[in-house]
Image 1 (cartoon, one colour):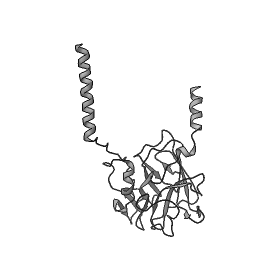
Image 2 (tube, one colour):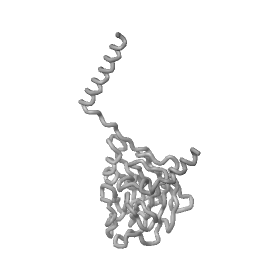
Image 3 (cartoon, one colour):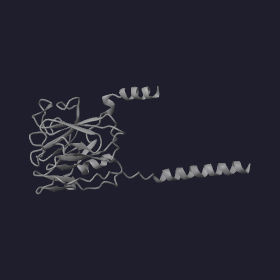
Image 4 (cartoon, one colour):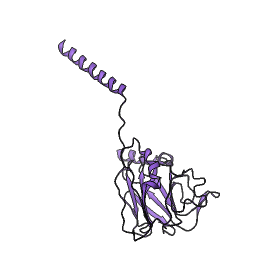
Length: 243
């Protein structure tokens, strides 16, 4: 009976409850030679979440992706993905494609390019028509209005890398900030990335080190109230023992 109740509760979770907003994910690496990338979750991702990635052309006027390039569907399973976790998507252009968490499938012609490439992450009922965009990365400076109508902002939830980026990886801080969302601007600033434009980068593997946050330090008044409370408790205990 308990198992039935759990299954029913899981089935009752609506797509809206699983939705994530722009900036909830950010790219941490891009490999045009291997055909892969990695992302960091800047919020907890619940089991059952489906995220699409597309290297197709975004047509803002039509409100849809067009062309024959690939779209990928990432399904978050198991216990979900905790904020700060980095997930790698490897060899996406062949049947051995894999994700380090969840599962990855593809449709269309998969072939990431070091030049003229824009990769989007988004939520939607189909890979063609997004309901909401989460993140984007481009090696063509989002040419042709590729950010139009997406709600993404360059340097905040979208990253522009130098053309010819065979391999690029974020090398900025992964700890020390107060909130995961605070990393978004660092992650979407190409100055915090190392970029390789020559050589065979197909064997390069990005860091999967998790991002961390620093617990906020209580205000002095909070300390005073806490100490006062502890003192009152201690006094009350002594009074009861002496009575």
